[in-house]
Length: 357
Image (cartoon, rainbow, N blue to C red; front, top):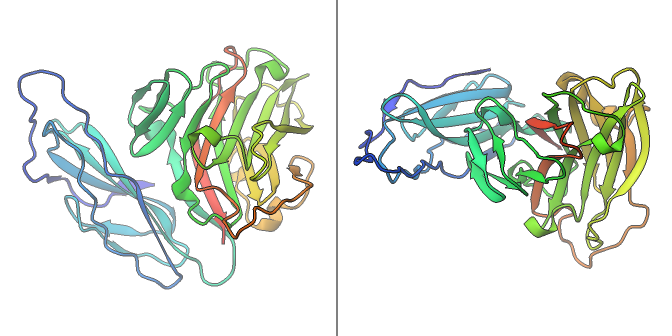
């Protein structure tokens, strides 16, 4: 639940600016930030960096808090400092600061994620809950575009935000960087991707498949090389059939995926909203799809490793060392989706990330 953390305050020197009626450069937020503190620790006061506002359009700022766990509140004004209160062990969420113009319209939003660890004892800790539909409405061109401080990579023109998710044309790659959710590159990681098919399913078989992706790489040109994994699901005889497709860790980097056997969700062939869950325990991947976020969210590591029929387990069977003590996972991590057919177009609406610690 999001609620105002502070009233709206005028920005220093704010105003409509621009003048002349000509094109106005867009306002850009500072890069996303995050803080993780140990159990019993204190969250630091947060001062946001300056927004890029060459047209002088910012008139005020408003802060909101979205708590994923706990009930932390933040008090402050302007760019800050904002001070946290009410945090407890296990608290986690985001503090967002939105710049508005003189008419009260949103211009750009800066995001700060926070987490206070649980007391000793390991578990799944949420590091990101991204509502893709709430991102700034943006028309994307092929290549790399930064929206609300987050990099989106597309093969063709797509759209994102403004109440809708991230689109993907047929046979086009669409990826969102979530490296900030996985700063510890040796821990088990998990993503849950909400993908809807607003226009419905246009046919059956792999030619109408939708894929939810978790990709690792050392740069944009190595994404999908390794270690990477994706769901592939499609209508099959009135059922929804799911497979896992996966790639091993460096130094393989072949870019080609291995496909698993399949599992059929009986009678669910017409369901148009699925949550893909991908868990990476180093070289072993656990892949499943679920009809609700609650069903996709595990209570423990055991809940992932219960080898139930609807969870596909796959991974490498020949391990190689890479000759040093480098972290297992690459520095960059992206999530996304892929649509095989223009008559069955999935849209990415939510990304939830976890690490096990």
